Length: 512
Image 1 (cartoon, rainbow, N blue to C red):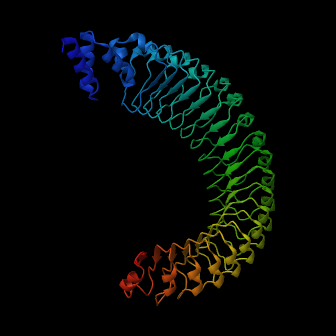
Image 2 (tube, one colour):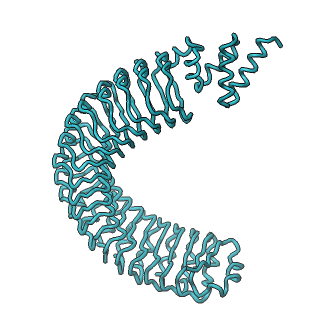
Image 3 (spheres, rainbow, N blue to C red):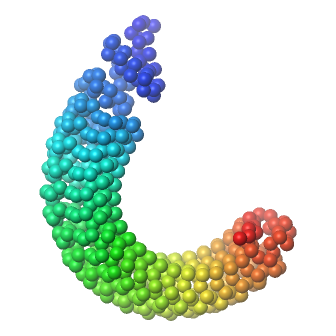
């Protein structure tokens, strides 16, 4: 082996060692000798060596051809000034490093179209960033930016700008000049206001302002006529601007965790709205105009202060998901039965004492959650919910179930814990798809023979019931895998015998 070949072999071994000291030594050898084609190829194929190539002025012709560079998770603290040599660079990904600043030379990357430096330690941007006039995508989330360089407003071709999770207190005036901007992410900053020219972003489709310090929204936001998503979660807002109805193209509106006591009637003009999220708010009522949202598919109002629903709720003909859990509802309007496309209805943690018979009209409902109310009985019409797969009736005041419960042929999960049930209706045997039956903390002393017909049953709980004798009906449940007898008189009495009777079943006798 000649000397040159031996030197190349050594350089290759050092480059491939993944040891920083060895790599530095490899570059010193490259500078001290004329290396061969195999070494040159190794230097070019490993993108993590690009900055070293620039610093050592190696493979300069190749460096000028690079159009895409990804340098993630390398604990990079700075960029070399020589980065300006990457004159054809179009994409630069520097996510997950420890960069504090960009060098002024970054402005020389005039062909750059996409720049991402998320999860670094950037505190500001150099004015030279305004020279990146071909930039279309700028992602700077999870840094420590307190001010945004006004030169950013010169990036007129920008389509997406992500500044979320920084420490920004304001935005530069002129932001409205970014006429091609489609997505603007400003969540999790310290913004107390927005520049009035934000209304100039006529092509903006997504605006996320969540978790800032905005106490009000400028009316100019309502001039963003192409907006399809508006995120206002976690803001100290007490009201929405009355002109919100002008956002005709809005499809999703998220106002979770705010201080709204009411929603303006103009919301009824949002005819294209498909999802409205208003969780954990101070809403006490809904405007009747909400019934005009004919395209609404998801309505989440859980954790609010609603004491009643307007009859117009029944006009939401395309609604598929309705979450009203954690409110103060004591009754439901009969019009709720007109929600015939509803698939999920969550009414848990309210004050309901009854359910209107019109619920039987919800032919497409798949999940019905009525837990933690004050229900004493269910309407017979419950049996008309032919597509129902899950029903949660836990923590109510039920003493019996309607015979019609047996008509729910597609029911897979039936939760009845924390009630006053002493038995189940014989019609329970008709639930041929039932997989899980939870009777925890009722007043059951045993099981009906009909339960043996539940061939699909996998999990059964009699925990917390006054069961004194082993229910032999369980032996005929061939598919059973889990049987819960926690806190029953059978504990510490027949445990071993029961386990022998059901060798393939996991039996729990845990005590509180």
